[in-house]
Image (cartoon, rainbow, N blue to C red; front, top):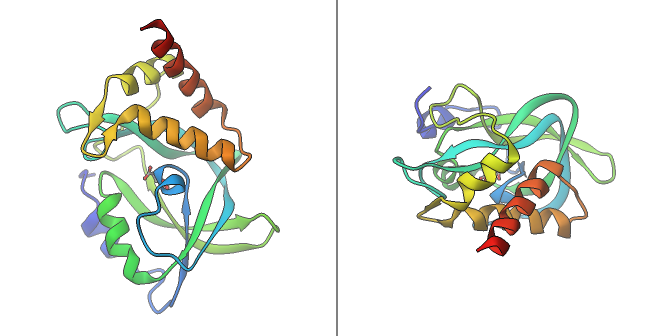
Length: 190
Ligand code: SIN
């Protein structure tokens, strides 16, 4: 699959005719809401786990030296915690551009803290996209992140902002926190 997913996402018509739709964010969409929204609530989705397995050519790396950002990997029984935003369909164009490096706009049930669920959207970079980097140890991922940067800034900022945002929400993510610890240990060793 090509890296730029804008054209594919523009054809996604599951929410045609809706006045508002919930969007689930699990990465930078948790801590950087650079779009208008009607409401924002902590939420989760089931059957997926967050991993720094997607390459970033446009935000936290470059086409020559991609950084590492999160995507979701299918995992039976897993729950991924994040932030849901109630948005209007006019916001899709901005999001499709922001998430164009391999992410597909998909429909998913989103569960809120009170247990209530609604069908909404999530951007997921599937393993068949050309920017996908795949699994590596958390130490290798931390080394990769420590040496990457792109137009949106250092890759380490992406990781640290995500870890802080999860902690602020009272959520723990062992994968994200392990990478954060490795990164902090490199800083101390400098
Ligand atoms: C998301 O945050 O939901 C998608 C991945 C990203 O933009 O970091």
